[in-house]
Image 1 (tube, one colour):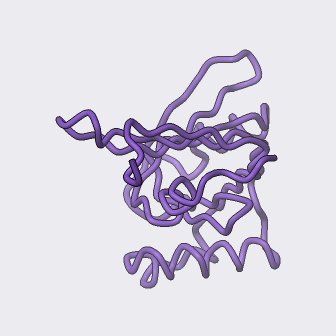
Image 2 (tube, helix red, strand yellow):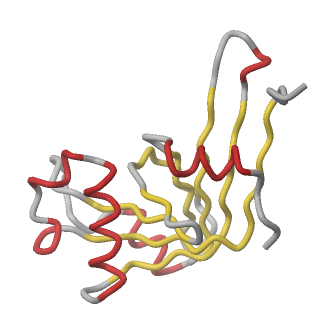
Image 3 (cartoon, rainbow, N blue to C red):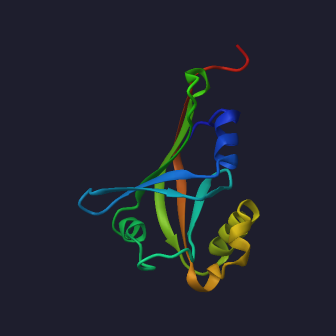
Length: 144
């Protein structure tokens, strides 16, 4: 993977929400907004204890059936010279208990104070998206 520009890496570290795209074994897509943390090589997103109909979410089933996934973060503004986006493509996995799961929760709790009061070890699930390719674009170069 070629190194993304510094501004794109900063967007991945600082963005508060991304859109996670998964697909089931038949290719039926799902796109959902998620909170996430980025460690420089992978993105982590937790299934938290906000109200849901089930803990076995479609995104988890999709990743188990088809690990190809992507996450998009973007900046929208009526001034189109401020537009930007970063897309991470890779292979996703549902993490079980262990060092990667624990590290992911540490990253997520550091970024989102709301997670500090949730018992994610007991009730949560974590998706890891390993970055194979990072695409980025922005309308204007601030140095120009």
